[in-house]
Length: 75
Ligand code: SF4
Image (tube, rainbow, N blue to C red):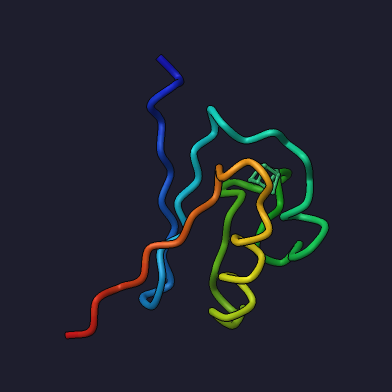
């Protein structure tokens, strides 16, 4: 049952959601932002140290929709 796996990674401002079952492994995310997306690392998504705007822009470039963003609600 790998179909329903959803991984979530947060930096306190946004949460990056990754759905492995629809990822096309097109490499666009880790070519574009290797500090955040690195498939050789576990976890392969690390948000610390990268501006949220850059993370959001890269997530929006994912061609399959495997990556998406959830914004934290203001207190
Ligand atoms: S850009 Fe999207 S489809 Fe491509 S490897 Fe990254 S998560 Fe997967």
